[in-house]
Image (cartoon, rainbow, N blue to C red; front, side, top):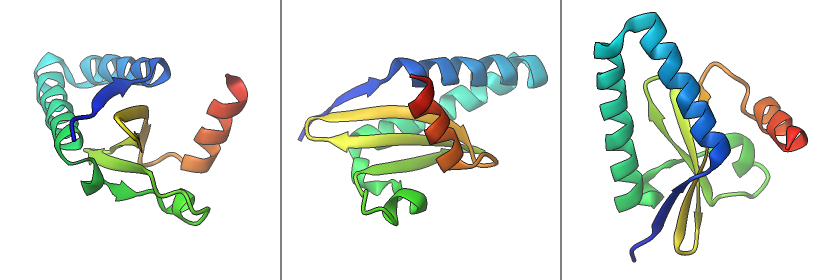
Amino acid sequence: MSRHFVILDSAKEEFKEIKQYVKREFGDMIWNEVNHEYKTAFTLIKSNPQSGSPIEELKELGINHIQYRLVRQTRIIYEIDGYFILIHMFISTKRDFISHLMKRLFNQ
């Protein structure tokens, strides 16, 4: 089944922040490597969305259709929703997922 791949606006902003940070701290060459890793992850998600890992905090709540794929120290959080794959957020493995999610929910 071919699915539409959508990166939500809020996730686009987070990706933009990651790009700015990596370029500022490590330079364009490293950003090009990291960006290639993201593109590879997107391709893997598109071709086999079920291959991601469940988010333990959500799994405990019975939510299994939202998964993540790791790129370096960032989790790409995505939802499999029928004909869509929705990228919801990019979040550092160092951040608390539930706190970030709650902040995101209440700030929108």
